View 1: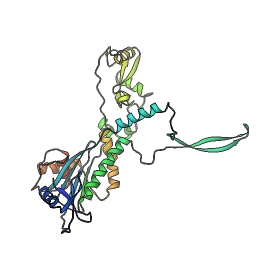
View 2: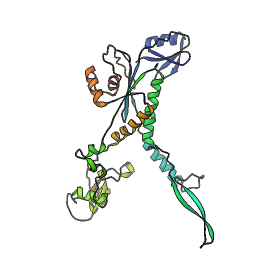
View 3: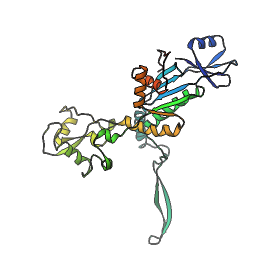
View 4: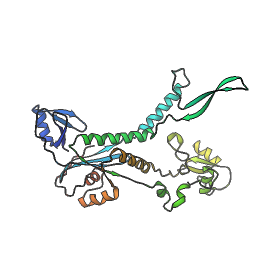
Length: 333
């Protein structure tokens, strides 16, 4: 991986080799600008000739692939892992806050706000305040913190590499997914407006009908039926039909008491496609000048270059390079 360089005014220059960067630092002709990614700043005036540089970004829900190329050389490539502990940290904070609410603490702003209006009630003979408008504290475009954290992290790394290169040509691969068709490939037309529980009294009765009123533990019909959460709500499970199973009341109690052991099939989650759909719209808005591409195009270009399937190799293909003469083995992670 090359070392990024800035001139005396803090403007980006073409990346240099590790050997040349070590010599400049040893001779006190440059100082360390930042460590991640490693960047030096020159202490003397120099020529500022630059080449056409391409910056390729392979977006993902958990990892981001980044590659920097010129006409026929891969200057740098790497893979960045996005943090996935935000949801757990928020749950831990919620538990601590809930325990403090039963103690005497300072005033905390209420979660929801209402606009109030005073009017005079003739029958009661007094002024009364009435709540008339509900205001949500969430601003427009609000996203769950776990998703917002990954989006901010993605934008932060894109901007960081973009500011370390002289006028780079930005290319980003986005994904567009039809989650409803992934669940049911035969869906069409008005079916998009009808969920799984359409035509049933509620989700509970849909789950009973889906499982043919059969207990998923003892495989018998009849008796008092209940719905069991395959992934418990305390572990992030939802009340959606995909996370529910039909069980007898007695089997349900024995299962939770540990008298019966049964392995339920975990529902297939579609968090990644949803995240990719969300970030795709925000990429269009934040980087309107970027060259947008899709996975089907990247796959063909990567196979033409003879590269294996990795995030950073996809990013190399996204840059639009046609012939690779130099491709370093070092991968920045």
